[in-house]
Length: 420
Image (cartoon, rainbow, N blue to C red; front, side, top):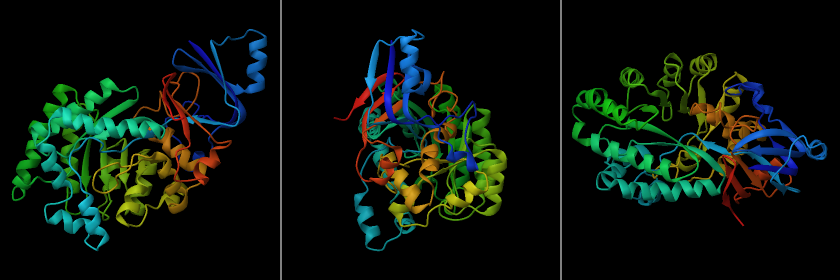
């Protein structure tokens, strides 16, 4: 099957030219083409150019199309890669949000047994099928907003069987849905209450039992640790991640979200795929991540939802880091699956340009989950996963915020979502 999209008012290719990511000033180059054309063959991008070039090639029989789609007045861009989410969980924490609005802090609620531990209790009482049902609702909603690839973490079970159940639920979603789903083991999300007075025993359980069990079933590509004040120390994180690496997993870190504990520098030392949050990253961490090529995944929705200062995106970009954007969709600190909202927050609150934000939400998001060789940009040979937006320019998508601009979502050359 060959499909030609032509007369595209604004075509964003994100032209990586073989690079795994864009960093620093490179993030401004999004490969925009006016009056563009895109030829898809057998689920992959076959050719990109202008509508005039496509017309000439059709006349000369250089290529034929089984289907021609007129995209006059529309924008086409790579699908969003949401590289940090917690979309498989159970329970509801809207009551905690109401308390925070009355002045109680996130840390105070967690100290009372709320926060992650509240969700943990709900997850432990849920079946794999119930967990998958929650995830299915959120992931399909995310697709309607333009997400064509998503990472989903465990981390709300905090015991062997419940963590495995979360990951098994993620596997169900991978089997049922057309988009790419990366799975991450986050057993080191918090210390469960039964190990409150013996955290060493829980870390031993993570390293000696849980990680091997996850690896044996092939349930996760990544391992992540929440490294911050009140959670896991630098030393504990390194121990857990090195064990996960031995088991064949790639590495991620929840880094320096609530305070500066130098987790960003650790991510560079361990050659992590990404370090995420980074609200309190220090200068040494920025320099180390930039040099090591670790993607900094920023989650502006979390800062917005918790009322925290935003990550220093401008300084990171100016010092040569590769920045990604993700929703952090989760039940406690950022309950949204809308990547278009992340674009708006990145530009208005973190002072990123529109071009930088789009790069962060596509190519660099794919780099954060080690898939940018096949997705994140529209280039010959890569999968044809893209969005059609009802705007005449990509700038209108971010300028007109709070609405869903996506009319169609294509995944691997197939029309997967139609928002008419």
